[in-house]
Every structure is written in C-alpha cells, then in structure tokens.
Length: 512
Ligand SMILES: [Zn+2]
Image 1: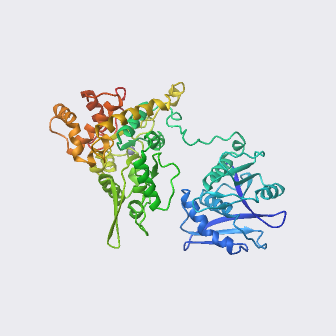
Image 2: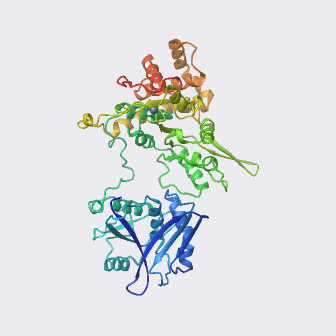
Image 3: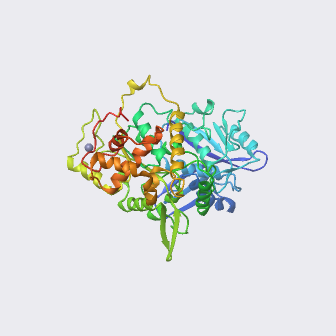
C-alpha cells in the first residue's frame, strides 16, 4: 500500500448529516463482533448482514474478535447506511498493517449491504457526498449501477461490496490511478491469454486441457506465472448448454447462492485450510461444498503440495466419482461434481529446481519425497503435467501474441467432434470424461491399439487411459479423425513428469 486509508461512514442527521469515523481491529480472543461508539440496535443488527455480504463476496471474515469503533464516540448513531463502511474497515484491518508515515487518504463510504454483497440504493447519497466534501474526504464511494459515472471524478459508484473494495484497493495502491478512465474487465469480454507474454507451449497445453476436459498440473520455480495460467483455464471452456445450466443453478440454489451467468464455466480455488466438510459439503446444513460448486468448471489447487493429505484424498475421490458424498445424521448426501483440476506447485521444496541463477539445494531424495507426498496415483489423474520454466523477459518484448480466438476456436472445434463421438453416452461430453463411463471406452479402441503397438503392454491402466484420451484430444484440436503416432508421443511427453524419477528437465516444446 502506498497510502493509509482512513474510512468514514455517513449517517442521516438533519440537513447536514454526520460523518462517522470508523476503525476496526482484529484481536485474539473468542470470536465476536463488537461495535462501540453509541450504535443503536439497527447498527448492531447489521453485524450478521455485513459478515454474510463479505463472505458472499469472497472475503474471509476473521474468526477472532472484531472490534469496530465509531467516532465521535459521544454522538448516538442509527441507520443502515454504515454497512459498506463497516465491512470495508474489517476487510482493511485484515490486510497488512501499513507503515506509519504514509500519506493519509480519507474515503467516505455510504450504503446498506444486502446479504449477497450487493449495495442497496441510497437516496441520501447527495447529502453524504456534500458532507464528505465539507469534512475533507478525498474520495466517496456510494451505491449505484455498474456503468454509472459521477461528474466529480472523486466519487465512485459501486453496485457491490467487491466493487467498492476494488476502488479502495486501487486508491490505496495509487490514488492517482483511479482518476484515469476506469478499466474494469467487461463481463463477456474477458481476456484469456492476451495479457500473458510468452509461454506458448503452456498456453497450448491449457487449450488441450480445456478442449478435452483434462486436469492439468503446472510446476516450476516461483514467479514463472503458473498460478496465473491456472486461473485462466475456465475462461477457455465453452459455455454450458441448458441442461448443465439447470444443474449448476440447482447446486448453487442448494447453497443459497444465485449465479449471475451460469452458462459461463466457473473456477473455484480451494483454500489451503479448507476443511473436509467445506469441500464435500454438508458442514452444518446439507448444502454443497467447493467440489460441487466447481461442477462443470475448474477446481483450482494453488500450491498443491500445501494441502493436507486428507483433503487431497477427498478431492481425488470426488474427482473419480464425479460427485461429492457426505453423510449427515446417517443420510447420504450427494451432489454432482464433475470438474477439472487446475493445479500448480514448486518442483522441489526449496523452489530452486529449474531456475537459471538459483541452485536447488534439495537432495534427490528430498525432491522425490516432495512429489511422493501427493502420491503417484493422485498425480496420474492429471492428464497433463508440464513444467513452466523461467522466461527471458527481454526476449519476449517483441513477441507477437496470438488473439484469444486462436485458442477458443480450437476448443470449439474439438468440442464439436467430441459431442458427436459420445452422443449415445449422456454422462460423457469430453475425452477426459470417458473414465466415468467404461462403455464409452469402446469409442477409443483404435487409439488403445496404437498405443499398445508403440509401447507394448507396459504402463498401468490409468496411465494408458490418460495417454490415449489426451492423444485423442490433440488430434481433435487439429480436426483429425485418426490419432497418429505423433499424437501419442506428444501425449506421453506431456505426462512423463512426477510419477517416475523425472521431475524437471528443460524440454523444448517445439514439437507440441
Ligand atoms: Zn530444491
């Protein structure tokens, strides 16, 4: 953060209104949420609403004791207009403590929150803006529509808590930047790879993953862009059809959530401290967990080696079954959960393996243990496992970046071919899903034969299947009916890491 954010709220009080200073502190102790500074019942009641709105917006509400102080302390305060400011002060209190002598920026936020994190329109905002100006606030954030623009460049409209947070964090980074024309990614026009330099082979592998619904594991030293790549996979997936949309709506409905654009495949990142109940669902109620909420989309496992063994097992079981299962008071509760995994991790525990200037200090055994922790069986479920090497940024400067359509067209083409191939199997739409339906395997007899001819009977069942379906996808992406030896070779190349003693080797992906 480049400056210290001071949060103010606003309450209606006569014509001039009243600005309220808001400070939040997260303290250790029993979980709780106290508001001091003469709040009335309507403000006290807002606590649950704010927590719900924050959670819905993807913020983690602190499990410790939250203390929020309103000033001036002697003036009684009432109304729901403080919601947005209270929530923001908690969100900021969680962020890292800024250094002391940073310049101060005062932001006034006024508005009530709904449980789903949206803001409720505020007729009092004119008064609030005027009051903030008089009291020396630098910026104002008030409820409003997405594209609404205020004539004063210091006033922003936010239709949700998340959008308000976006403004506050941009102001904190660089107060000047927000005064420039706002560039928010427009829905429906998401950039996929056009903001990622280089990594051509990796981008192509992600396209294969999306085309055939294959799970992908990217590994490499820190800072090579593997997390960014992982987060792009769902953007490559084709839009869902009506049947799938219906299923996704129902799953989210069970969780009490509404999906704005259910036809767009989603991605969910599993937090490292995710509990089993959070993943498979049925924590306190019978609602779905992360696994089911990723249905039809991508489950992101960031820094794969940091998850507990138990959670990895749960992910694996769910992935194999294509559904979650939990029991609650003797009842079995299941939800569909057919997702692809997009995972990343360091190639070794020191992170130096594969880095040019840094020497890996791990022994061969340590590297082996690093991978073995995940288990060979789990790693084999990733049809694609590729290294993400460091790039020479200077070399990339003049590089031409392919338009996103070059990748999405390939996915669309491959999807069409697969749809026709698996017409008679309702549960299979992609090559990567044939493992869920053994009957569909007969569609790939020729490919199995070819692999057998090339490498004999060796390789476990899962490995053979993984290679065959991936080779099939590669041929589909290139619009070919027959899988050739070259496709099989490419597929074998993309999955040789991690299950043998082959962890890192700078390979050229020229032939991919
Ligand atoms: Zn190392």
